[in-house]
Image 1 (cartoon, rainbow, N blue to C red):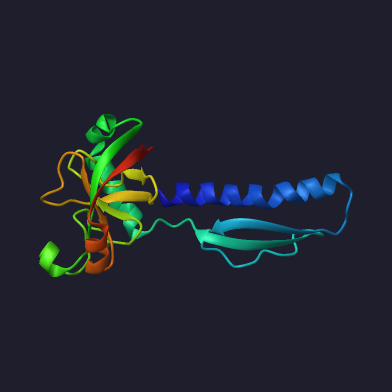
Image 2: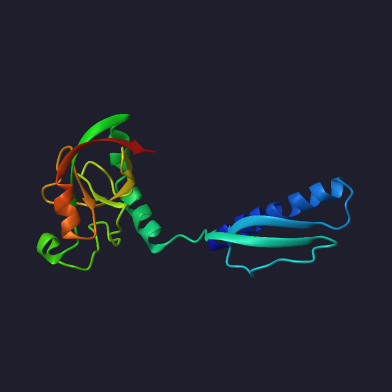
Length: 182
């Protein structure tokens, strides 16, 4: 699997480098400085002096999958039967907020039921009908990922993770419009 991934990455890198060089060659210029924005492929930071052209590679965020992505991908395969029954279009959720405090969760390490660490403006606790990794856009709040469960989270209820109890109490309980993002 790593060999195939490495070959795909190498091919993408060659296309990113050689396509601008070919375009510069067609225009008849001998000296060109081409800047390419590319994700990190665990290679050296710059590639330079390819024939008469200078190619400067600027890196964006890494393509490497994070531990969080790997964990959620495992859940996606385990819960594949749930994806077909997700709501289509907009629906109403009864939302509240929660923290990772020990008196709420029974532990204070911030590790969710899916095995990933909670993060503000990303983590929500969803009913069991929503597989872990489900992206839900909540009007006025942004897009969240179903990464947690809760004993009272059933039906149309969700819990949005926040850092402090003050934020959770201020949030209260609200009916919000949501939509599953596929």
